[in-house]
Length: 199
Image (cartoon, rainbow, N blue to C red; front, side):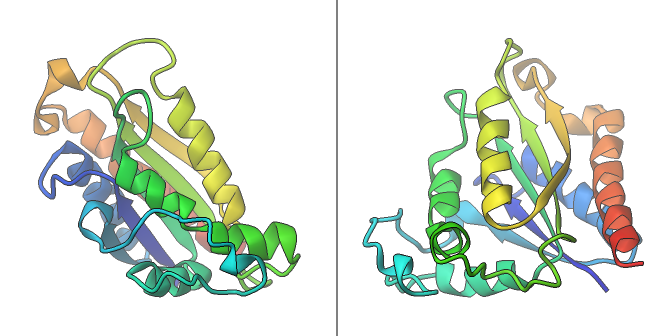
């Protein structure tokens, strides 16, 4: 049975981004996956201090909530990150969360000894859900580049996205069931892709 981690970048546990992530994970569950959610804004960790301990070691010198997260991300099969866009980018706490994966970066690219088990490296899948208050050109471009880089670092294949602009006009996504359905289908598709890779 494949496992999918949902990563929420919004501090609003009952907000629009959380709703879309919840529906995506439900789609994955309905295809047989187990799931869990990490609510990043409420986690206890600092931004990367570039101590460089992980250049020589498979661990981070900063002992905080990220230590347990690393183990989860070594073993997971799928990842769905959901976030609002803020200042045309990823919110600070979520970006710091990603930056703390220098542990994986150093292992993969410097020591040439990835932390992700070899049997999982080509099978892991990741999706992305983002909402933006504004409906302007290029609003999602920067966050997508960051997500793709992050997924590459942790050996996760980027397999899809749901991008919802114009939230300042929509406000409540419960009034837009087609968008909620699209999130569910995104999670379902991710789970199907995971199963197909295991055949």
